[in-house]
Image: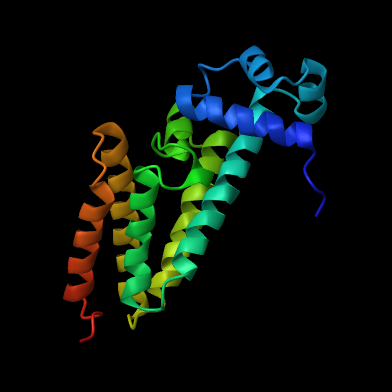
Length: 198
């Protein structure tokens, strides 16, 4: 795979930091250029316009988040612990203990999808794709449990809903215990589905 050029990566990282803090529509190209120290000509060499830059930023964040979460989940032993590890990881993120994800300001993909709310918008679709990829990671952990396929689907959906609710609670209401609360609910679901063994 061809290595991303330093200037392109610098633009993406700078744009992400600004978009995450302020929102996409609130940040102009000139602010990104000023903050990054990259020339306008260089920006337009790498990106056809702001939408192309936003798309690249979404892909960059998606990969970083995916790699981080997969790394956290892979460390857990198969079974119920691997499912609950999801919420330990979220707790670290909400409480700014994950340097590679930057200080928590909610879910970047929820934020961006709200700014580009038409389902057919390519940026909105990238946000949706991110959620699907995270759900696949969660489903892989659920598959380590001894559940029937229908039950596994239902439990995966429940965990995804708990995750999204925890993110919203942590961001909108500043509840830094949101992931722990969601973990307690997930544990109750596990126990009721007889996945927990003595």
